[in-house]
Image 1 (cartoon, rainbow, N blue to C red):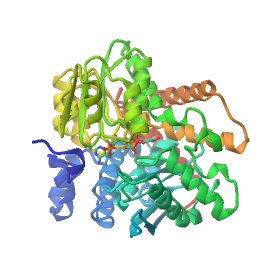
Image 2: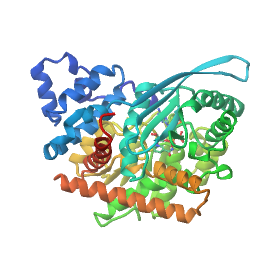
Image 3: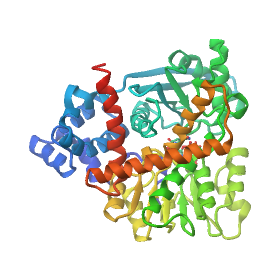
Image 4: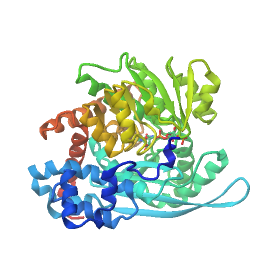
Length: 486
Ligand code: NDP
């Protein structure tokens, strides 16, 4: 039987490179350099990776995220050696501030529960820290650091004045009543409010945190500070300062990016079969936009299993199950029956498709899955989630010539629209859906084009991983150099 996604113990499953990286410290000197040469790590960057591993033990997702960015930077250092001066890269790999706090709350049975809260303020060279809050039992400091690190480059790619941060808690919202969710959010904000602000740090949603949770957190912030500081949180409801199109932005943006990427090969979503993992915020609006561009979504999932509907996924039904009834995706098969298949615990990537859009969580698409997708003729992969493909999977796609859009570029539409929400709050204005979506589409096209141009400039056309990492890095690095050693 296949593993459930959430049971995968290591973020580098079935991956020799991952095992090696984790035992790097135990390798002798020759083997260490063999390893770095094999994996194209520039010798100037080698001690930085080694230091990140040593100073952040037990944080494999963070190691993986840093490794992936540093793997791209060898070419930049070769061209501009001064970027390695003044420990600039070491400083980029070290969060500016990490806050960990207790979140006590009382459940419906009157029992006191304790969770752990996190906010990692990673980099503020370009603007106030900005990044979502995740409520999921798997959350720990390493996961929040990986997300904050990725967020720094993603936010730079949007071209907007926002730094990188991320937060969350190991709280599991599943099966909790609305009142429990509210009490938890209030307790979480009771501590977090000291560390955030419109000009300091602006959180938003992520896994397990949607409009309802943002509403409860904003309410508590307002009550504690006696300030109606709308720009302190984004992803707010429309009735209290939210932006139109924010809810849709991450999914819509990812599809705009992939459509543009396909356009370079003179094709598009029209008539294509797509598979989208997850059935949360990002997945739902990814599916909606694929359909609008003329594609057909065959399958979606949650952490228990996936459904295949050869007639095309019925989005209204998914929204009803997930956003209103808050049930499992299995319900879809029960309610629809004809032509629908539910597979428990399987891999959604076994479903043949032209375009795959992983939109659930990190490391959900492994090397094995990538092999299956390639054999089944996939032509493009767009990451809606953060780091959903393992390093093995990315390599397999690239070697097979599959167009691959990494999350830090493809899913940047969410945070970009959050920055548009901040603009609307600051000017006490409210834009129409069409105005906001037009801005979003323009931003996604710009991100795509700058990644594509950078990849070409550095001799690796169509390598969007390289393009995104280098473009994001250069923007952050330029600002950090100007600000001195801080
Ligand atoms: P949601 O909570 O709305 O949905 C998450 C979906 O992924 C659910 O279907 C959930 O299934 C599934 N999922 C979550 N964790 C796991 C897991 N460990 N194993 C398997 N499936 C899992 O979150 P979002 O849609 O907001 O976020 C999805 C991804 O997109 C995340 O990687 C997030 O960081 C990223 N992202 C989100 C942005 C946003 O604006 N919301 C912006 C940029 C990136 P189940 O209900 O069974 O847990």
